Image (cartoon, rainbow, N blue to C red; front, side, top):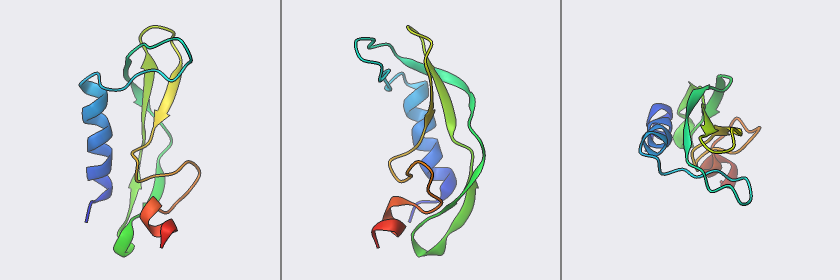
Length: 86
């Protein structure tokens, strides 16, 4: 079962490896690390709870910023995707 820190390490690794592209139509730029989002609680499957501070990124081409969430989190939700699905 993944921990809160594990799910954020995956996003951080993808960002640092240049694997994340800008979502602005027609831009195609690469996202780079740019500070952090607001810390928030997250509840994972099995009742594992913790606090997570999502990573922010900026596009090297167009300058648009984004808050990056792992695929186990949803915007504006305290519980993980697996918990909500159950």
